[in-house]
Length: 65
Length: 170
Picture 1 (cartoon, rainbow over the protein chains, first blue to last red):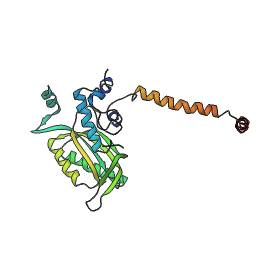
Picture 2: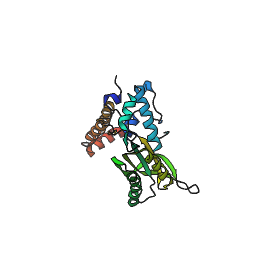
Picture 3: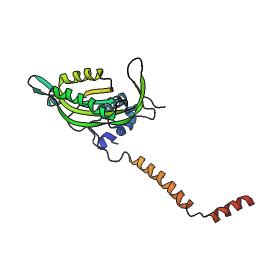
Picture 4: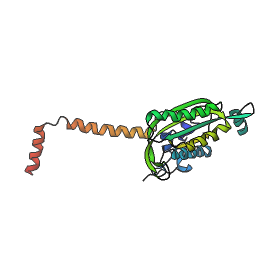
C-alpha cells in the first residue's frame, strides 16, 4: 500500500507542516520506524530531518508524557 | 543526476554563488507586538544588503510552543511557552547565511532560529483530509451526543417523576 507522502504526491517535507509530521511520530513524540511508516528511505530521511527541525523550533515536542 | 539538480539551484552571479535558503525564527513573547516587525525588518535588511531576493514569507504570529524554552541572559533565564514564529524564503549569496546567523545570535529578542537550504517551489504540503479513519471517528463522536440530546429533550417532567416513582416503589 502506498504511504501518505506518495498518496498525496508530497515531494518535499516541510518542517512547518506539523499536522503532516504528527502522523509519523508516536504518542511519545518519537519518530516511527520505516516498518510502521511504510516510507521509502529517501522519504524517511526527509521526514526525520523535518521532525528534528520542527522540534528545535518548538513546533513539535522532543518527548511527550 | 544530483549534480545537475544542484547546478540548477545555484546560479553564478558575478563570481558569487546564490542559493535558496529558508530562515525560521521564534521571537521571544516578551517583545511587544509592534516591535516584532523591527526584528523581522532587521533580518530582511540583512538579506537585502547582500542583494538577495525574497521568494515567500510567513508573517510572525504568536504560537504556543510544544515545550518550554529558556531564553534570556545567563543570570535571569525565563521559561517561555509561546513565541512569535515566522519564516522567510529567499535567494541570496552563500555569505548571507553566515552573516544572518551571526546577526541573530547577538539578537536577544530572537529565542531560536534556523537557516537551511531549500528549493524554490512551495514545500508546504497540500493535504485534503488528514485521514479517512480519523474523519469517521469524529463523526461517530458527534452523532452519539446528538442522539442522547434528542432522546433527552422530549422527556418531560411527568415522565421523570414516573420513572422516579418506579424506582422508589422497588
